[in-house]
Image (tube, rainbow, N blue to C red; front, side):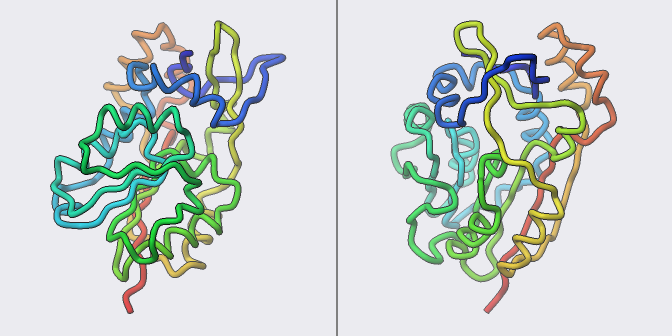
Length: 241
């Protein structure tokens, strides 16, 4: 199974499948598929080693361990990855250190202990969350006072570009079911749980991502969204006691 180089435009007759089914097929090739959205996130994410060093970190929606492996290099006190996809977690287990804990669970109901994290990473997962308030509540439950959560995702404006999250299985195109939300709704849900938005970045593709499109023979798709925000990166902090 392969994904489109970026979000795809849903074709006539494209079938809709849920994310667990999509990632069950995608997991073995997920890390080998060039994805400009993930490349852009990794390039712009304002993370420094000191943000994780000596801290208890949870990655909600850890997938194949893309962020877990980076955080491991920052010497956290502990590191836990949570994902609903068993197939993606199998890939993460091959990539991550044995000390990194992996747990199959819903990111809005992880069953991890209360106040067990200093930092949470939630990368490209909110689109699959059916209840933003439940997700925000789970983050608030897990984080200690003055904790941080870093949330990134495809920009909600992507729908207006005609984007749909699509994959191919046996040469047939499928649309992955996602949830629509606005940044204002996310910020409001987080604020309701006591979080403060401290940073919000809404970047556009750059020359590095243009090359990914070019290699995939999709330069026209790059031109369609040039100078438009395609992802966001938000940093929220929890209240102090």
